[in-house]
Amino acid sequence: MSSPVNAALDVQARLGRIQRRTVLTLALAQLFSGVGNGAALAIGSLLAVELSGNEELAGTSTMALSLAGALVALPLAGLAARRGRRQALISGLLLALLGAALMVLAPILRSYLLVLAGSALLGVGAAVNLQARFAAVDLARPERRGRDLSFVVWSITIGAVAGPNLIKPGAELALALSLPETSGPFLFSMAGLAIGAVLLFVGLRPDPLLVARSVAAGPGTAPASPAAHRAAPATEAAPNSALPQRLRGGSLGAGLAAVRRSPMAQLGLVTVVGAHLVMVAVMSMTPVHLQALDHASGLHHSEADTLAFIGFTISLHIAGMYALSPVIGLLTDRLGRLRMIMAAQLVLLAAVGLAGIGHGDQLWVGVGLAVLGVGWSAATIAGSTLLTESVSDEDRVLVQGVSDTCMGAAGALGAALSGVALAFFGFAGLNLAAALAAGVVLAFAVVETARNRASQRQT
Image (cartoon, rainbow, N blue to C red; front, top):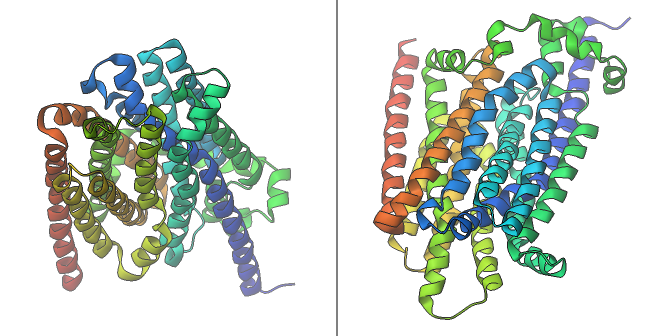
């Protein structure tokens, strides 16, 4: 008979294996599903202008994407709480797959409404990509939460960077199929989203959230092995009956109340929401601004070449968002969440400064957009980690859903206002407004950090 110590070590070893499988599966799924959002970010605003005939509506595609992500974040979190991460993430990717199909049809049917509908459904895929980072920490050890979360965030780099760079090959594929050039990239998006859903279906077993809940309920309820877990699905469903009502219901008010109980949770939420607002507002108008600069240059590039350049620029931005995530996760664990949050705001300020001051030069706009991605990454990883560990276990999934809802709402607001700001104040004025928003978040972070340190000294 094994001793309690050996039994505990055996459970920890099994949980470690499940966690490694979970992180790998999430990473691979993100790699492929990221193609969909990358293409939407690069082409969506151009399609909105082309099919609506109104430049002020350029941000509506990104607004629809962000707003849909906000609206489905809580339902996805509620579904995860009831059925596990696997079912929630797969359901979202299947809706995004439908969205990519609508984006293929939009230029064929010359329908602006299809652009909005397709963008909205692709926004569900964006919400899935956000919630996948939380699935990575369900079973993570406290000292590795930042790194595991950041690795899953990083994994989207290849797919998301490839998405915009598939614009020219997609245009060529579309021409070969007698389709409009702007339909082609979304054919690649459909393939990537389908592969991502299959990977989650096959690999996300056992479900990390349900395993974590079983372990929390008592040592006797932990699954003996992944195979045993698959053979006895009732062990997954049983813990759901003990869920608090606020988790089953998925109330926005209850989630915000949980955040208000913790000043550090408030700071984490404000950080991720503020960074998303700044990033979406500037990023969504960059393709329109770059297209205008290209037309003003008088060089008469072909439409395919212009789209390829815009795609390359957006891919640099997305690389900034995800490529350095493991480094940022490591720094978040080693330097602390609060220091990384303040550093992130400084990076965001530098980014909008570069893009705003150099608004007349495509190179400086591209550099600013890449730096903007790095600032977003630092704010999202540090803020999400702080938020996750600053609330109770029973509130965690709901608060994560609230976080993504607020991020999506902020992105929708930023996208909606950015088109108007670009039309009236230009790209430089848009970046100035973004700088003011980042400055407000930085001031809040400084104040809350000072209060936290004072509170620790008193205790």
